[in-house]
Image (tube, rainbow, N blue to C red; front, side, top):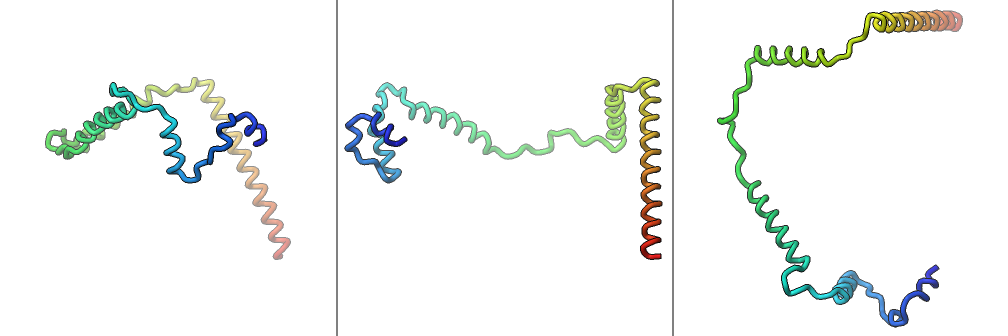
Length: 137
């Protein structure tokens, strides 16, 4: 597979030595790049503009935290309780309540399931009790 790649490359690269260090590779890449324009539209000048905008934002972050003097005081315990009740009522209005028929059906399903589980646990208890009585006598 590497033989095919060697055949596709131009002859001038066959004699070139591959750089062994990272610094040598960077230098080789830099020499193959075109020089930056003199009109100031190079990528480096764009980066410096972006950095100056970021430094303005960083300067804003250096200010001290606001004091609590201008903030509202926390509502009293009674006020918080009534707010909680209002929010509970608001959430209960969003609930889709089942119809009477659905309620009866779901209640019946739950009761049948509970009776089945009670019977299963009773049977297992009876069986294990008999087995323990036979084993330990």
